[in-house]
Image (cartoon, rainbow, N blue to C red):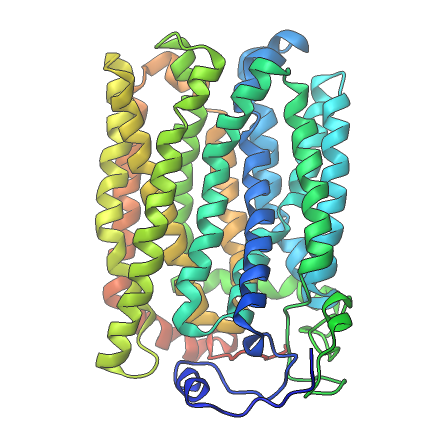
Length: 486
């Protein structure tokens, strides 16, 4: 890259008004070229996709593992529940590590170790070692769940954030549907061990992509090299922040404990409660779906895997809905209310997606119980996953709008809590369905989902007042900006 100075063009000045301060530093990711930003986003999206794929790819293996490793079927859900819990809690480690040592080092290192652990899982001879391998692998697969959305805040301007976050969310959500779809064909044709071999190969391949295509994206306005020149080699340096300045936090212990202060912020409590309840319903549905088409409709393993196309289509449709419409709502609010509209302007998108989610959840259980044509149950799973991805995208964008440079710390609390909730429900799936059928559990899930959306209705009307109240009482709730260090 040639020497260059970036003048404050009219488009940059517009961005200043939208919450991003202008910098003439070529190491500031906001000033990178559009193609480089897109490559960084796509590579991060691929790495994010593998995390959820790894968790749920075990769905079609439950029955074969039960036979091969002599384990009761009800206990095989540990191979999903363990990784699910680890995936959420591990954010606490990776955010602290990345804020101190850099996102690039974190992503490259975790993808290498995750791939290696998958090969251990493929060679496991006992159920305990399989669960241990999958759970530890999930710890390392988890690094982009929180750091991905923070990367969006560091690299993309305000007006493009929702679209960028939506790509991460759709890839994360696609893993929930693609995992069992792919896993079913692997189990049917190659055996259950190849689900682990496949994840290992994909993780190591992604490690290579991250090594060559993902530069350091954190930035703290403390560049120590030439601010007006960025060489090709700068993209390969394992800097703690882009430009080689001071890290985002002054010590690893401080980075580790920092997120806990957000546990008492009202908007964090509401958003975390909302999405935790949504993830509970989605996890319950997907775990049930991995078995219901085999048991109720008599499908073969690969035919049952094809039913995951419905939730996959719901996920992709949600990207068009939440990603594009969210940014358009913000652009409209910007023209009407000023350069940086209230973050709550994104929340009306949850009305339509919430209706689809609630109705779809109840429809899946009722139709499965009544043995309606299988397509009816698929329509239900479409609705649930459509709402799930919309909810995830809207909440991520909302946090970016409210907390800016501190979003990663907020998402540590968010992701840990929601995954603990989903982990807890995993072990109720098989016993509850066996004792109560499918209708009652899924009507309960739909009621939980309805209550969750009522929480967000309250946030829409009172979110502004809650944020003002928090800013008066908590330093961490006050405005931050791109490039801040803590």
